[in-house]
Structures are given as structure tokens and as C-alpha cells.
Image (spheres, rainbow, N blue to C red):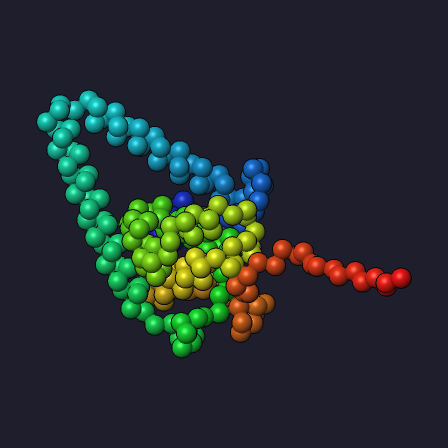
Length: 213
């Protein structure tokens, strides 16, 4: 399921969704439309999954085996479709890419982490296939990036940040997706260079001189 399909299914406004996803804290955003509508969606989905499990348990062993086989075939078909999409994404050429394969990045680290979570959560590709699509990125690099403390610049020096931005930018162009409001604002604010590919933690070194006696 794409993000657009999810928002449409939950009847959530994209602006409200973007605001909600950028909030921090356990209770921050309770008054946002996204919180209630998404909670209802996941509650219903969990109930549906529980009902499916109950039905499968009630089946005869022969029927249960057939059901399991069908589910495996559907999953295999889904992964095949996902792998085909990865090939198409790889072939996309970005207009602002230089000779070294670099592009200005206009999504912050938190936005990239959000996109990774959502994309892998769709289960259309395996994590290994996704890492290969990023240029054979090491799984430890991905784990390190995803586990960093939530902050717009946290993980900017990690190779996952740049390569994943390129991946999703190609995917957006392939699917003829529009840039959201936040993305357009970042382009204006960050200028032609985009976000810095390093994390400035605000710390500074101060050298204190002294006079010899």
C-alpha cells in the first residue's frame, strides 16, 4: 500500500499527516486528525487479522495446508513485483545528478527514516534487496542510521542517508509523484547545496592560550 492509498483509505489530509509525523513525544499530536483515524485503521486491521487466524485454526488440516500454500504464492508474487519495480527505479536518471553521482539532498534524516520504515513495512521487497538497490549498502549502516536519536541532522554523514534519498527521488519521478509542501520549503531554505551530509552537533573546540613565565 502506498502512502497516498493509506491516506485515502483513512480519509486523512496529507498536510495533517506530515505535521503529525514530524511531532515528538508520546502524547504530542493527540488532537491531530491523523492520530484518531490511523488508530481506527490499525484497530480494524488487527481485528481482521485475528478473525483470519481463527478461521484458519478452524479449518481441516488439508484446507489449512492449501490456505498456507496460497498465501506463500501470493507473497512470492508480491516480492516479484517489488523486484521488478526496483529494476525500473534503478534505470531512472536524476536531472540534477553530477558526474560523481551526487545530488543535493532536500529531505532531512527523520524524513528519510520515515520513508524507509514505510517502504519496508509494505513487504514488497526484502531488506536485502533494498540494500542492494542502494548500492550494496551494509546492513550495519542501515541499522545504525535507523537507530539514531530522532533529529533532522542525525545520521547525515551515514551513506544510507544520501543513497536512500536518491532511491526515493528516483521512485517519485518514476511514479510521477509531486513534491510535498515540506520538500518545496526545504529546496528554498537549503538552496542549491541541499542539506549538509554531516551532522553538526553544536559542539565547538576552544583553544585557550597562556603566557609563559
